[in-house]
Length: 480
Image (tube, rainbow, N blue to C red; front, side, top):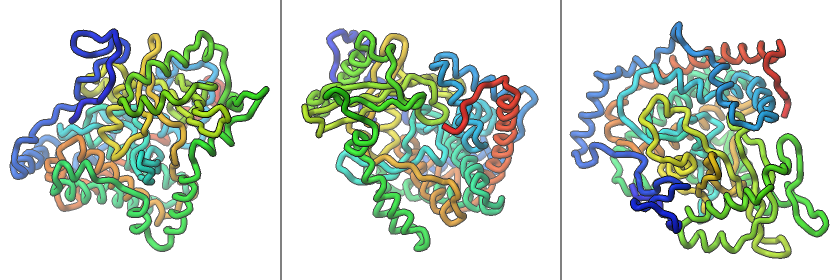
């Protein structure tokens, strides 16, 4: 893997690292077996079946000592904006699927006791259906890829597959689909993952890294009955750019453009702007951009900043949006998202991250997994908090699964399975993983069993939260 390119600050240490930003010279993954022949790597993969039988992945039974899921989630709230915690609970209690989306830490704890092969990849850590989507590459091509990396860290590839599969069942149930339809969608998603891993196993390293899933390829593969929907989604994504965001999210007050307040979702805070906090964050962040991208970024001036509540599991973390402009007439805008990065929920169960700065962990992990990453992707630190920075909107769009039908869920699950396989093949050993999976559907059927059982577990956990909210022991703001 190439080292992440940065321009060093003047206070770098003897090893070339910046004490504020972490060490940019340490790779995120130590590859093993790359100098072995394909035959030897395949043997290594098949031997992993003795460590974890493929059928063993179908087992899920919570132990008597399983930690209280609500206690795990409450622990994450300790360093968040306390006034936003009820909003997080409100989003999680909406349905078992939204609970699942916010409970990556709960599933990480549960997965730690499940079988693994010992074959490591750069894991997403939160690979559910809504964390895949469309975005623009720097070349302005519309790509489909994993789009959330808050929890990324080197870890077992199986954990990403299991989280994806469980989310398929929960999304299907949420849409009112039958258990048979949900199982078929899981078979489709995992089957495509296995098939594509087999294809990547035959490709050269460079071809794997050049590989991408673009919108034209996707539309060509969609069943005729859902292709028009795919075209509409692509057209909508192309319209979601910075100019649209400025028109929708800002207004001019006393001759100055400002971000519109929509509390508690978006609001200006005195603590956010006091002492030029965000300006300091932005100034430090620019050090992590490559020279040509820093040159581009320095043509923009910070105009306004506001706090923004995002996602489900991330609600309450220190997240801001920053409006920048390169023109006094406000017709050349740039919207940035400055998001706090905490330790990955997987880290207690895998080797500790090599990166001191959690924002750098997120950025490097994203670059390992994605076919193309945001032009302005970078990281920084302020006081005791780590951050990563990216564009707020750049043709970014996720798929609305509300009311999805069987054909749509099948197609989307297969697309996510394909994308996850490509991401894992970039950082892991596709030959060994493919050899472990084999040509049959033994692993696929095991994951169907696991995903159904874990979806049942999630529904039980969601019921605990629902009861706590109804009793008043947990405060929740619902419907936002």
